[in-house]
Image (cartoon, rainbow, N blue to C red; front, side, top):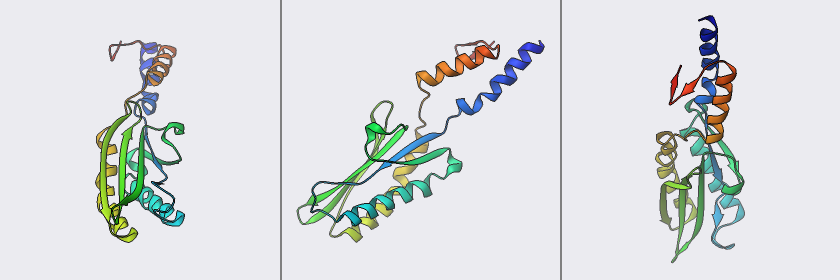
Length: 166
């Protein structure tokens, strides 16, 4: 009985692994062509998006916001990517949020404006609800995570079968 109790207590110590923090990479805004916006305007829009991610998803929410250059080289649960371009005489921005594990599009917004300042205003309107979607769709544990949990539980003397402790 004492060993079983110690095993259960050891499993409780594993709870931080079970309740994993979710990570979100906010990639740099990309431009459809070099003459759409200046590099400083693109960097500013990137910073506005990252700022909204950080404000909407504080560290107390269990989500860490990281920088990234491309979605394929970033180890994270979610990726936010965006692109600016021209549509007629207007500017547009397309922002997409993907869950990386299943390469699933979670949400997106597309806006067009007459100038970069108006485009920033539209980002400010849309970004908070956009980033809150990360909280609505928690990232699943990967097979690797489950295997690590099983090994740690076995080492602690606890059998995990079909989600039940025995």
